[in-house]
Image (cartoon, rainbow, N blue to C red; front, top):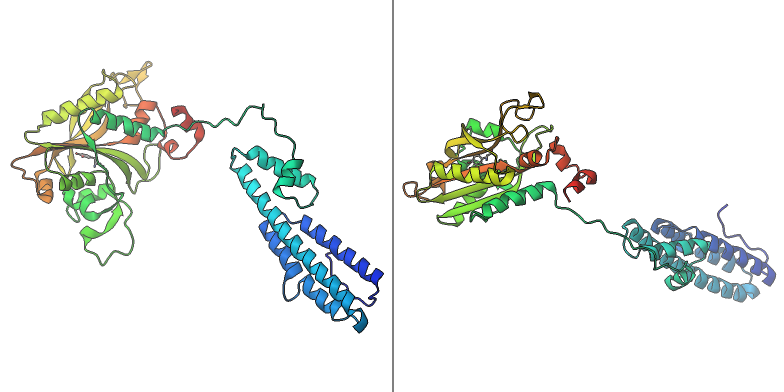
Length: 404
Ligand code: DAH
């Protein structure tokens, strides 16, 4: 039964003593049961709320009810009780705060975890008696400082970032610099300036999320999640005059259903080289070198005709299958990785379409260049033999720590 303030009829000293004792014992018990901020608030209100808290009831049921001659003593008692209750409520708050800090430290495995645990244990051992921090630690089990410490496991670079840095490294060694651009792009940079005119069917291959509520803006200013890193080509050419040699790593988004090889979010590294007299031979030589640097010097490349609006001619680059060495067969059967073809398609590339130069004020009669774009997860999947792209994004430490 929770404590309720009794109506007093007997105002003699022994009767008051007993009523006070009963009240104080209820105060102790209820304070000891407080173990959270919410408990404490309820405790505080029960004892101190202006309208119907225990202190207010003491005024009504004891002080006001006391007969004339007894009023003085009852008044003194009630004042003392008010001090006791107020002090107790504050002490309980301090205890409760310290407990909650200690708990959060323990949950977060903070280095002072042992001390915090000792505080909690000491406070539990004290059986509800409130303790200051100093008292609790002085009652705590001594800490054995000869025990081994807490070993913090080392983090590892995420395989996608690791692969991205490796790709960037290859191009840095060729004299490329790194450029980055926004993940939320305008229609202009993601499509129009890359020679995807409005309503061009090539846009259908790169569906994405559009920011809502932009119908009143002209199409080219509308915001979307970029579908490729190619917009950074445009941003780079706007910023610098030829010669340009940049790689642009980053996250991209597509309206693609999840499966073992597709994810609505993935990463690309884009490349762009513009200068005088750059030819398709430069493109072939550069990418052949890059693929050998990434997959080993025995890898061969071949260029297959393809289409991208912003390059002309365009090509898909295939590398000889790294699983079967390009033979198309492995372990006495067809190679599953290259579907027995001996080749794996890896990236897109081409010579920058002269129309694109028109958007950035380059003179197509004077300069030429090539561009390429590759999916980082795709390369990581091949390099590390990962069989499901989702593994990169699930955050499962057992998978990730293999790359440490
Ligand atoms: N942006 C293309 C895509 O996401 C990849 C690409 C192809 C980039 C050819 C290029 C390029 O720079 O020249 O599918």
